[in-house]
Length: 86
Image (spheres, rainbow, N blue to C red):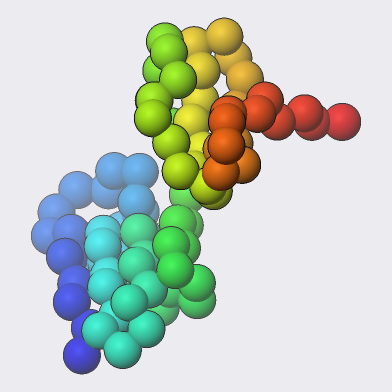
């Protein structure tokens, strides 16, 4: 079984009218945003936006957040670490 929330009108950022806005696959639990067949746990077919936070939220290992300082942070299970891009 697949649960879908379908766009019914307008183009918008998710594309044409026939595109599913949100899909949840019952067997795998995979969630698709803008895609009907999500291949991984969260599959987004467009830009993913993290709303910047002015202070670090409480976090758990594997969490991500964007800071208002323009950096992306990763929680390593103990503390937040700034991600470096080279």
